[in-house]
Amino acid sequence: MTNKLSQMVAGWALLLVITASATAAERQLLQGYVPAAVAKLDLKPVGRLPGTRILNLAIGLPLRNKEALTNLLQRLYDPASTAFHQYLTPEQFTARFGPTEADYEAVLQFARSNGLAVAETYSHRELVDVSATVSDVEKAFHITLRTYRHPTEEREFYAPDVEPSIEAGVPILSISGLNDYCLPHPGAHRRSGMGPADTSNGSGPSGSLRGKDFRNAYAHGVTLNGSGQYVGLVEFDGYYASDITKYENQCGLPNVPISNVMLSGSSGYPDNNTNYVMEASLDIEMVIAMAPGLSRLYVFEGNNFETVLSSMVTYSEIKQFSASWVGFGFNASDDSFFQQMAAQGQTFFQASGDGCAYTQPITGPCDSAYVTSVGGTTLTMGSTGTNYGSEQVWNSGFQTPGWNLNGNYTNGTTHGGYWGSGGGVSGSYPIPDWQQGLNLTAVGGSATMRNIPDVALTANEIWVTYFNGLSGVDIEGTSVAAPLWAGFTALVNQQTAAEGRPTVGFLNPALYAIGKSALYSSCFNDITNGDDTWPESPSKYHAAKGYDLCTGWGTPAGAAMINALAGLAGPVFVDFNFFSFIEIGTYDLPFSTLAEGINAVSTGGTIFIKTAGSSSEKMTISKPMTITASDGAATIGH
Image (tube, rainbow, N blue to C red; front, side):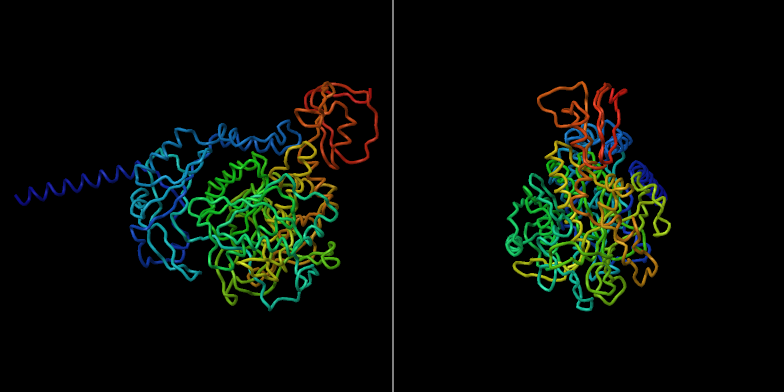
């Protein structure tokens, strides 16, 4: 009897093992959710998350027709293509490339059947926000959430003990919130008193830069103010509205309307951390300083990057976005949203980081092939806040407290506390088409992988009003530069709108086209002084003529840059067979004479003769441009 019972128990055990193995084989494994530091540093768990704790997750779905999307993006940014800057609406993007309704429903059903409450859905079907207890999350993804001591920060983090797995066939691309090893940190920080004396010669206290200084330096004499344009900011914390009003009043700037977009998991209230609140205030104040006539500024506040981007792509009226936070996780869904922005004629600026030369593979989003990575300079104005003087690479050359380029906090005396313009080579992204053709050997760049930054703007000795009435001198970080570029691009898009052209869209193809052309010296301030070196990287990188890995192509040189970007934003179309009461040179309403096209096109721009035809016009062309017959032979001057 005992032997027979033993045989029966053994049989059941075998059956259970076989069943469990079969179930596991039917699941798909998701990679990258156990932090690499756990295995690399042999971190041991110190506990386990309570089963009743609520987690907020964002589940991303893959796009469809990825090859077709890649081809479309190439044509959208190729001036020789008739699809050049013929952007998609969010609805058109979803119809062509978004997940299907069936796939979206499959993910929703997976969430609901596993106890994950659906908190938010999106019309583009690329993301689902859910919330659930730790116990339900563990069951849904076949993991145990352990806690560990963080190797570089004074806190514990949680992470799964194994990589998560889900039912086969459920179309999930990414899951945000399964670990908190990387948290978003503000990029801006105070410069230590150990640093060199103020040299900016700005109009703010102690010579700091504020308000109209930025326009006087980078948009001198430009009357464009961002009217009719919108800017969107990524924020992981709130701000005090009274600080923004105070800054505007201090600087003699108009009050720009601000809309707060509160997303899943955000509190809507500023954190009791001056650095966090300072970041949000800084971003807002820099945009307003450069584009004081904006129709509206949108502040997107969330608790994870994916949810923020997911909301941003639905605001098609916003043509320029900026992010200055560092240290957060980056996944495949983020690039999907960046590609969607490019397809919709929107551009995204990301601070390149403040840790000088990168000594390890760069983590996104600053190295994504679909964002404009912004480095930093030290600006000296020609006189007290009235005009551009000179610039060099921003490199403090000393240690101060704050978060380094990898998002790790340093107390100012440990490794990683040196601050300067972040630059380096991506470990993930191949070199994009628009960055190819540059000889980067002398500046330490790569011919095969993406190099950053793309451009730069001033990054230190900044005056900020923040934390319910405080004011700070000597704030620094590429956090300053990214929102300034967003504000500058609003000026460009204001001009393209006035000329009846499309927006400039994703800026890098145009920036690199200008950088490689004869227009470079008039459109960019080429930064040739300074370097990104620090004790862990004593030889990389140094400023040089043209593109380098400290400040990219450099900083914008006012009206010349605006005119060049506007000229490259959209070609002028001419159709000798077209006659209408309204002719503005767009694809649908082309000019009917070449003379009108030449008068309208900006220096370095392109004229497309839309359809085959002829014109007897004879004229002298006195500015550089490209004239292309795009659909059959065109004859001019006969």
